[in-house]
Image (tube, rainbow, N blue to C red; front, top):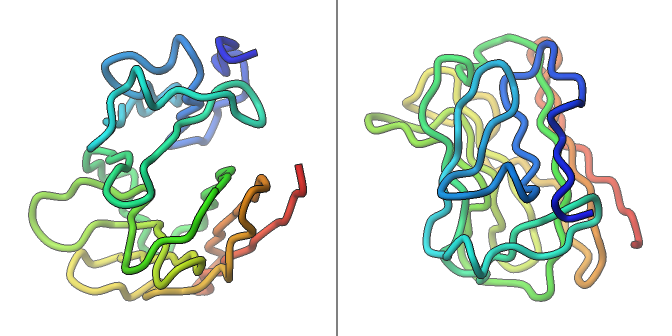
Length: 171
């Protein structure tokens, strides 16, 4: 259901859990991990962004300049640590240029991460360990996003290898 909370899910070891479900989305996007680093919507009203998702609720963006920004936290300074980022996405069209989906809000220097679409349907990952260059991943492609279907994506870091892994779910 759209208002189901993910609060009862396992959060041990997580540095971010944003479900976008009813009670977790008000004036901010509540982080239900132990880190409690809430996100914020940009260029879209909370009231019009809420839509039915594949599991609970999702967010609807305009495809040009709407996105979620997560405030800076040392927890996202991945460095050489192992990690995984996972999300579901449903696109109804492709856009040109670079369109951010999720990024960290770092006032000075390069964000630790940026996930976005670049050049139409291509989904790319940018990650930094030093806040000056995209040394972990610079426009690392997850390939083309299938339109009008749910896509599940996972980006993993194991040792020094950042690996984007697209999973196609025709839902």
